[in-house]
Length: 593
Ligand SMILES: Cc1cc2nc3c(=O)[nH]c(=O)nc-3n(C[C@H](O)[C@H](O)[C@H](O)COP(=O)(O)OP(=O)(O)OC[C@H]3O[C@@H](n4cnc5c(N)ncnc54)[C@H](O)[C@@H]3O)c2cc1C
Image (cartoon, rainbow, N blue to C red):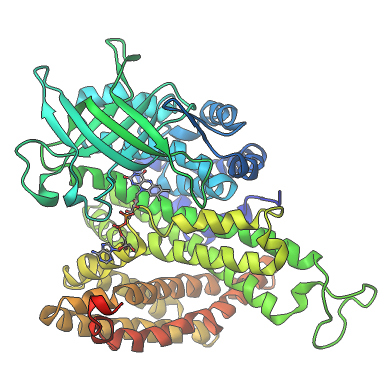
């Protein structure tokens, strides 16, 4: 079954030493009372819950999968009980609004818990995760009545939620969707259509499921400007707010798939299903973006969570498994061979995982803090700046962390050799589970187009310059010492390169938009490395000062040096690739493929 122990020491390093969250919280009246004790207490409790309740169900849930019969879905053994315990412990309500029964804690804390949940059991975590997303969309765009009806139950976890966007012919391009919504005499709507790939669309964890469905009104303009959002409950709440009449939205089948097998991926058929408009007609995609942006950050945390658990298991294995002797002579002469951790390439595989998980944690928690500040900081200018930075960095969290997650789970499998490929050790599951994170919530290609097209070029580089000025401030204030040169020099060089490349692409894309499409995926990886270089340099600064204190800082410094010594050089291959332009991609006529 392997192991999972929440990496609380590293989480505390990020929260307290890198981000200084206690002081950041003090500046926000909503969180001013939250001290280090509370943060550490949540980490401890979440660490216990995820390791003791959810992790033991991860492999068994994958092997058993979900069951579908007569429109009903049964989750794997143990999931129902675990979900009950999850709700009783109050985990669904952590960062939710106190007005509707939430605990009102910052996203920064929620994200740490989310990382642990994903490490322990991604498939399980998606059930409450979608409920939380539905909560966020209704909280932002629902009517008062909708909020009173749905929010308390979504917050407590009593009811779950979904997002129903995808249709067989409409995946990335939601402008193509066909589900229609006709107004009825009661002021509600009747929805008809087929949604596919709906995660947690049907299951036995909760007595009601609140579907958020995108559909088109009869007078809808074509394309994405004609999409409206509806809340379609599985059981329509009665006058007392309890599940009432069974609605005409039903699960037609579930998918058999590569990973996250314990999460039901459902075909949902709507036949005159009763729905209620959320927000304004034809403005549904904008409303849904609240859920989608939250979900994109959430998927990034799935990539991060899987990287952590895969790293832990492969590091433990590399210390136990003995095979061959070290090139420089036996390291454990009393054994028949040395543990494989002596081999440089096994270390490369472990350190790659470690550098991506620790860099990703610093980055993701920083974004969570910026999200909190964008909503709760008393200074308008800080709120606006944080909002811009979150918008810029969301596609990077989603795509860079999940691409790295797949790379790292593969490396973890490789460390196990053949024992990673067979099912017994559980390493295959991490690879299979990690694969979906690059696809759903907008494929990673779509994230890269969002980053380069919308967040960078369409905005004249304003948001990117905000991030650039953070780097500049750090370098001027804390990077000028000789011992920081090994970290700061490549950071500054990459920042300059990305600036130049952005200007070149801006000019090229004006003449030919294909240039933007051809550059986007490489560009996102370059930007991801810039972000990681910044956070690794900041972490190195702290570790340099404290390296004599304990081995934690020694390890942090060694990992920073590995990142700057090896991983960042990927960027040197990406730059000429971007500069080679769209020509080599578009030269071949489609019928020659
Ligand atoms: C397990 C699972 C769970 C899911 N859960 C949900 C859910 O809960 N709710 C929901 O609504 N959906 C869900 N989805 C759907 C998911 O979000 C879509 O699969 C995804 O958005 C891609 O759409 P598609 O599969 O139709 O691929 P397509 O849109 O057909 O894309 C195919 C390929 O073409 C590329 N492509 C498409 N358009 C462009 C473009 N403009 N530029 C460059 N490349 C492009 C894509 O990147 C991709 O590589 C889920 C899917 C899976 C497999």
